[in-house]
Length: 550
Image 1 (cartoon, one colour):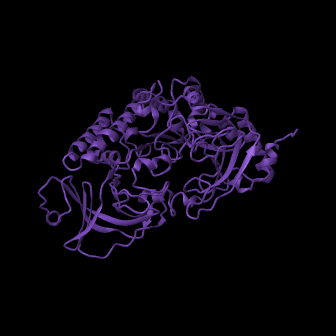
Image 2 (cartoon, rainbow, N blue to C red):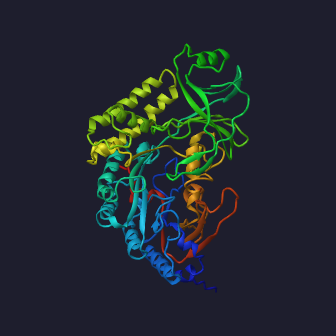
Image 3 (cartoon, rainbow, N blue to C red):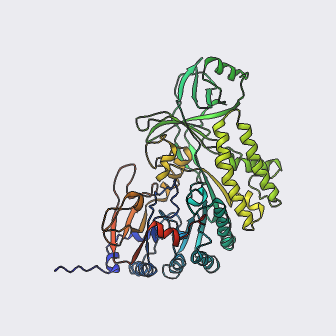
């Protein structure tokens, strides 16, 4: 007979490199998510493995003792939000039934704050609703920030699964906003403190990308988009790269881009006559024509083109990205990343002589209706020139903004919050991370690879993420004595035979234990002996109610 003993947790923690403590950022008490969003950037699994309340206490006390023994502070060595724990990655922390215990232990045992990101929870899950009310009432001092994420992919928002409803989702979102309003006010509104982020579906058009010269002018054409170089010339433009980020963490570019005429018209063909008429301003079909700056960019998939890829000086965002087929992806086409909601908010304020950074304190619900009407009018205006964009506005942008507006007013917020650049944040289209890759319909062959300049700024080689330096995660791993498919475990985790915590160093750009640029595997150290529980998806949906569940 063989007897196995498990080393005490403290003994195992003694083997960790000190950076695993000083650069710890992500300490999620669970993996797996009941929302199962199609665009999940972390490819979360369907089942949940989580620390029990007892296991949570054991871990936090052991970490505190080890840090004290070494004379270091947990998370104190990081450049980004030192002393703050992120209890989420491939989980939705609002569904964790012991989050109030987590907050108390973070404050009282580790001396740390927490940052929370969530799509919300169901008001009908009474135990969760009560827990979050306690957090909002009694743990304001523990929060460093909170972000509510509104996407069109959450199960409740989609409302097509049995037992779900978009109306119920709207009510649940209002409940979340109402519950945490005291905390939002305590922290102050802002992207780094308390805000709602709206992430929209991508507008993807597939089709041949024409790349030719007409009368010496370089021409690019795909779908309704025709780009004509303002000046003739055969030389290829140089690549545009991010040289650095400025003091506001905005990209400084190596090139200013070349001047092109951007014609939008479903009926336009890249013929010699069309090009000549467009340049002469006499194109005889319904169209839009504006001067733009075209940039030549590249990523791991190959070269691509970007039109006005960053914000305009007046705050608008109208970027268009065109992708030729490469040996890494066979599809060609474009993504129109125009931020229609943001642009409409700015235009509405400008029309009333309100600066884009100024608060619209006199706004009323009628002004919110005015923005929704303006979005409908934009869709109508696009019908004759870009049917796909018009449909995207009607079927994606408008419903999502409408849900947000209804929830905000139901929660009792003033209309000015809808117009607030600190609280209502249009982050544009979803990014190419995790499961979202499939939503770009073959325009990328590399998961996690930036597809736009703004994505490059977010998680590229010269980016906000790369500036943050090395980080670590401690997380439960899925455990089972048999095979578990990836859909259940999630894309970031490996199955273990017994309850296991994984301590892993992570690439800050892609949040994985591998350096993307070199392929170098980073350090991973398993810990055992911490109490965990497995909650299958069916049970999790009942116990850990997600927003929109009837």
